[in-house]
Image (cartoon, rainbow, N blue to C red):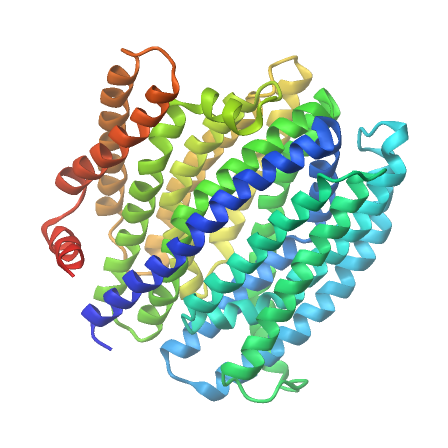
Length: 502
């Protein structure tokens, strides 16, 4: 497949995923409002922090999923079907084994932590424990399904991924409507409904892969080298996963300890917002990441380098287009969405948007390091940076600083991690670090130009629904024009024009 055809396939897959995105985003935002209104801020905060405890033990899920994804993409790039089947079977056995290990940790250390360290009102303890059990089951399903989802994405069956995502979002909406009905313990009912939703997705992913993707018969793989290869790569990915969990869920727990569940509700809402927004670039990255690994495996270095920069620049600009109007109108958006907005929600959302903007530059570097297979130093350095964020946040919170301080330290850590990643990756794969840094600063300057000019016009009008609508109607096409003329090179502009003409 030529470069033009591969680029066209990336564009097609991205379009499919955007259909999924806009449906799931709209449903997710409305669903969150229904759930917050049904549960109340306190129960919503409790669910958020209880889910965070489970996430402390599910970091292996993310690590294993990314490792499996890397090996499937790599051997697809080399067109080695036998190795592909071997890796797939091996990963299933490893995922099931880790699921058993996580279950043990969650029912011992996790259960102790939930009942002795988390700030939960005494009257809510029983319900929190029930929700915790269903959260564990949900995490286990997510872990076991990971190899099957990895296979779907590696084979670039984005239409299937989109359909299942739409089904899952629809079920979540139905669950939110059910929750709005009268129940004596809505917190417990919500935990059960979430588990049901993920169970349906779990069955759909597994059924599709078994019937439609040829990976050989699922069996217990006996090749010890296959286990050693995956586990060796995964061990350092796990280290990075631990750091990521400590950096995100650790913040959640610190906020709970120092400020209580109401602030957890604010953080939970900011997480919902950023997850919905990140879907905008996640679709693009999901489409392009398999090609990055495959091009590296096939030793097509020129195309590999092109994809890495395209991924970073495209992700940043796509996120910027929606981030700018949301930053300008964050308060009215939250009010219209939630009606009752927990304290600090607005500032949390704004800061996490900035943090995510910076993270878009790191995403292709992480994929590049994974493609090389040499991730030891990469994960070690970045993990230390993110782990150090927790004691620093603890120090500031204990000193009486506002809850926003955890986001300020996270942004500083993100910047440090970005440049450390770049310095390490340039030693692992053929990438021009100087050119990459110039691209980063150029993107940031363009973002600042768009934001300041949009803010100046926005500030001339008093708040109204018309201003809110006008902000989006003006800034989105305005951002697209500025990005097209200042952010894209001639080849990228030509590609965009050809797609518009079609």
